Image (cartoon, rainbow, N blue to C red):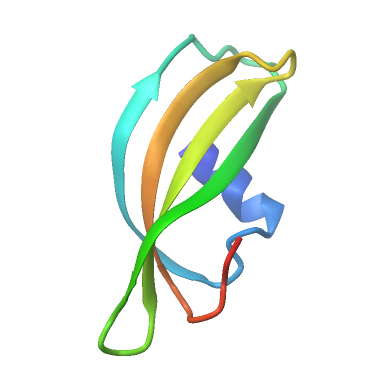
Length: 85
């Protein structure tokens, strides 16, 4: 949920309609209150739907301030056509 909030705040997923699935979620380190985190979004596989929308997978990598990864996941998003990042 924290990574989803970071994604929403970034504006990178403004064309998103819905989060369809979170898969391959791996926590690499404990997250503690007060940590400064950042999110890297990498678009990956996508396919068009019959309705003209796009189902796109994103690799989410959450890092703490020093750059060490704390969580990685694959988020499957329903997107309006044209939204790339």
